[in-house]
Image 1: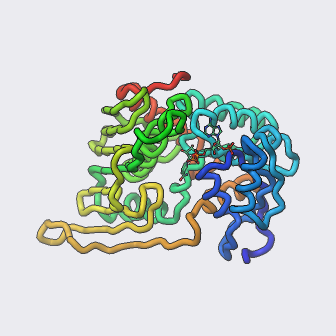
Image 2: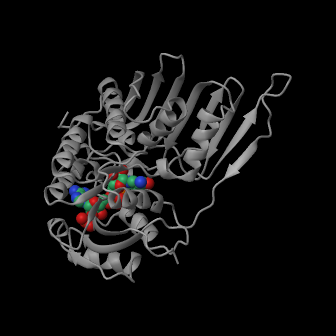
Image 3: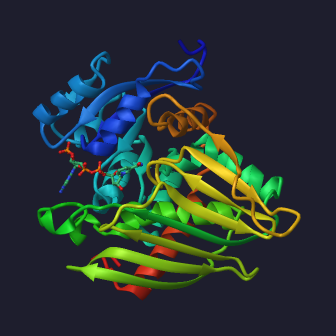
Length: 357
Ligand SMILES: NC(=O)c1ccc[n+]([C@@H]2O[C@H](COP(=O)([O-])OP(=O)(O)OC[C@H]3O[C@@H](n4cnc5c(N)ncnc54)[C@H](OP(=O)(O)O)[C@@H]3O)[C@@H](O)[C@H]2O)c1
């Protein structure tokens, strides 16, 4: 049991797809080290029956109200915050609707289709005085903080020079129906917004410690392979004035190997790995030996956890809201906008377009 006197956050979840199921399962886990209590007050779905099945499977012990619409979640007075797990193209509308009803918001990545939409959401949140955050959950993973300390505070690999990160999945895209959110540009399809955003996030965390206000948009060279207007593969090089280069890639036709990210410095390199680029489990530091070679054997730091780990971001949100903040320090609004500006530029060069661009 978690300790008493923690903040309690009452969630309304909209959409009952894959990510909503992962998020809700994690929220109801019994965690002795939890920083907040979470309750699933409401679920909104395109159908009441779908919502019912979802609740029975993923949060059977909660007293959850099931709605056959998203609007009823926004108007439910027992809901403090709306979690948005819909396809990318709906995030703008869902965020604005929730905010208009005075609800706080945690919205899945990619936060919106482009940076301009994100600015619109944050302006609405500021006007209404509600908390909003992009659910880029890996930034809240203890591994991420430990990795940043090693790279940017302990300088274990010296000066960072290059970062390579890939997130690719073997989706057999041709076999998916045309209305799949991975295939239909009207739903915000494409590898970049779905998974390439993780490759970019690791690169930014490794190459550029200035998360938030002071961070800048690096120079970008990008190429995309398109199918029906959506990118099935993206490759981008980020170039910093300091000379650091980051190569970020994503594809929907071949699965990434577990060693998904390599960070090279003047004194050694670090490999980050896990079953997916969105599911880090450990990193290994390889230092240069006195002879100048890089040690084949490194020191590994592993991070085991119950469930999947979505509760870290949820706890952070609960603490922020309980203390009256409307944005989070680890995933501030400026960082969401910076990431989307980079994604916008990659798409401008690569050719993937959305109607809202
Ligand atoms: N953080 C992570 O690790 C992670 C992992 C996977 C995905 N995601 C993000 O989560 C979001 C959803 O992805 P997902 O994989 O969960 O998608 P999904 O399994 O396809 O579920 C999306 C849900 O959105 C609702 N929806 C509303 N309008 C829809 C439409 N026109 N077409 C399809 N679905 C519609 C549906 O729920 P109802 O019928 O119940 O309304 C559907 O079940 C995306 O932003 C994605 O990038 C994040």
